[in-house]
Length: 236
Image (tube, rainbow, N blue to C red; front, side):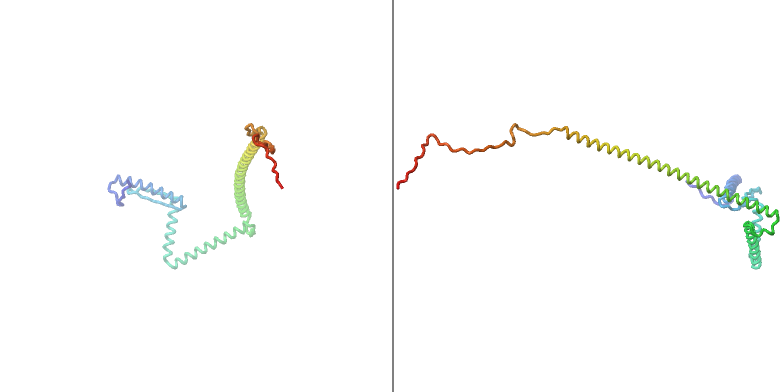
């Protein structure tokens, strides 16, 4: 069964009210901490119990969160006045212009330009900054090269393994071909031997199937009871 819906109203029982406060307070503090970590938000949470006991959580210093809140609140109140709004944006534009000039000057100095106004200490700081930047670039380059070498080694290992597998398959195919050739040669030899050793079988019934025939015609012989015919004489 699902949880029943709780009516949002003051809990009359003091014990139940204190237990609910402890549970929900801990859950609220946990959610505030998760929100600050997951979303990179600056969170400040202040809780006073019914007995005036203070509970708080801040992703940074609570005083800095309160000061930031008060500053933004004052600025929002000033924005309600058009004249104050114009002054505010003029001040913001001036600050941004100043930051842009500073960044451009720093960039030129890092490129080795406009160094005439710097003293020894400034030049030393600039040199240290360049060395730190160069060190970071070298570390990043070494890391990239190391990662590329590892990737190439991994690919080389895979190719070597695939090459070994292909060699195994080729050797297996060659072995099968040799066995097939051997079986073919053995079959041919067996057939040849059988054809040589097998005698020629003929069917004979004791008579020559095709004996030579000698035919001779004889003269008819007169029978014993018959008298020879007399020659017929013709009278003329």
